[in-house]
Each structure stands twice: as C-alpha cells, then as structure tokens.
Length: 394
Image (cartoon, rainbow, N blue to C red; front, side):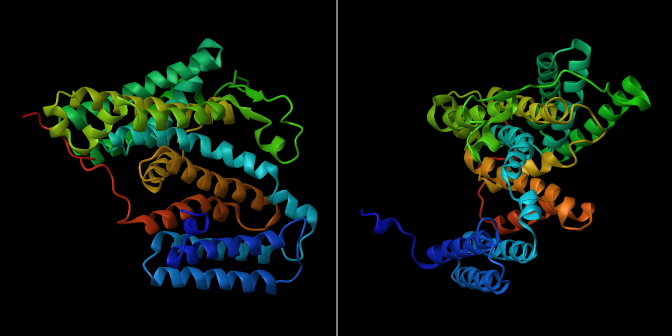
C-alpha cells in the first residue's frame, strides 16, 4: 500500500478537507499573518461548511458534524479578530491558552479514566460528579489536617473509594438501578461535603494558605518558544495523568487483566463460566473509578484552586462521563475529548477580558460543546454489551 492509498477519499476525505479549510481560515486571521479582510475567513468558512454538508448528506456524520462545527466556530472567531490589534488577539491565542487547556482538562481526564474502568467492567457510573466532589473536599481536609498535600491526596482517594464502594454494593450485589444509585451518590456528596465544610470551617472557609501540589519545571524546555509556555512548568498531577493515560491503555488492551475486565463488561456469563470472578472484578473497577475521580476533584482543590467551595466541581463529573462516551470507552479518545472541553474553558476565560461578552454566557461554552459532541455521537458509540446490566450468578 502506497502513501497515496492511505489518503481518505469520498465523503470522509471531503469532511477532513472541510476541517482543514476552516482551520486555515482561522490561521490566516491570527498573528503573524492576521489578514485584515473579513471576506477571506467568510469565503473559507462557507467552503468548509459546504464540505461538511456534502459529507453529512453522504452518511459521513461524525466527521461531517466536526467539519461543520469547525467551520462555524473558526469563522466566527476569525471575523471577531478582524480589526483587533496584535496585542488583544495575543491575549486570547497564546501559549497560555494551551497551558490552560491542560489545566482544565486534567480533572476531567482523571474522572474519564475512572469512568472507563467502571464501564468497561459493566457498571454505569453516573456518580463521577459526586466522587469528584468528595475528593475535592477530603483532599483539602486531609491537607489542612496533616500539613502536607500528599496526605491530602491519600485521604481523597480513600474517601473516593468509600463512596464508590457504596455505589458498588447497591449496583452489583443489591442489583439496584445504576442510574438511580449514581444520582443518589451525587446528591449524597453535595449534602455531606456541604455540611462538613460549614461544620468544620464555618463562614471563614478553608485556611488561606495550604500546602499545594507543586509544579514540575523541566530544565531547557521552559526557554523554548511556544513549547516552553505550555510544558515548561506543569503541575505534578498533570504529568501523573499523562502516565495514567498510557498505563490505562496498556492495562486494558495489552494485558490479561485488561482482557478479564473487558470480558466482564461484554459477556459476564461467559467470563464466569471460564472462572473469571465477575463480582470481584466489578467491585475492584468501581472502587478504582472512585479513586481516580476523587483524584480529579483533589486536583481542583489542592492542586489548582488551593481552597474548597461548595459544589466546586460544577458538573465536571458529567463532562468526564460525556468524554468517556465521546472517546468510545477508550483512554486516548476520552483524553482528546477532555482536551477539547478544556480548550473551550480556557478560551472562555480569555474571551471574558477582551470580547465584551457576558462572563455567564461564555461560561456555558464547555457545556454547549458537550451537548454538540454528544448529539453527534448519539446512536454511534457502542458501550460494552453488559454495561448497566446487573449480573446474577447462576
């Protein structure tokens, strides 16, 4: 097979062409090119939209929707920067934006990896939001109590595992509806953390200065233009999530343990027949899900903000669950979705200072993007066959 044979053709190739054309229109409007002619991004945006619509009419829905999304967003942003100075444009599009993308994507990635383990084993985990919130509170509490961020992370993981154990008992052994159980976990976490926060810290809130997770500076990289601003100095938990991403992929798809987990999620009866302990694996995966989700919440409180506020996860657990679906229950795909949502959050932050748009409106950008992404995948992402189905040992 030659290199030419690998080039996508037909509707798929046209959709990819639309994505490229839309991005080219955006690049022309940004520094250093910054073409000051609104007709250029408009024409390229219309061409990209035409490619997207053509692909959609040929049943290439996934890439067609992406091409249409890129065409609309890239063209709108390219038109907005027309007439803007280099300074104001650079305030939005710079290395800080991509660093912020990683910052915002990290808690989602922890939650998404936890959701992958849980759902690959056949248990739906709507309770990711509650587990993240639990980890956020107990991470702060453990850090304040011990005076060290590492102890805070351990306490957060234990709290997340305990909450996940509750979900596991009801979902696996009591065979309760997993959606209802996960929703109850979310409400339980809001109530418990809210009450404990007021009872322990009162109206003054958490202490103003706590030991936080340090950032890791890579010698030599920090001075490289562009790259240094993104990867030169990152929080330790961001590097950890990179490692966990690779480990999760290798564990699930390259080891006998991963094969057992996936078999339990696809056909638990067959797995049980050959001696695989279905209940034990499901319990382990649900609790591991709670540990990872709690780490995502602890990153918010101990690694990023440095304090705790009631309901501070504000739906990130649900976005993490959407990333699992978006990534088709695979680690790299889910992480790509987390980066997309993180980019939307970082972009919304920067637009608030230069766009003159209501901050409340811009804050909805990641959630709108989540809805668009899920609408494009409805009926096209196939979960593990036994996902959400309680197993009754025969």
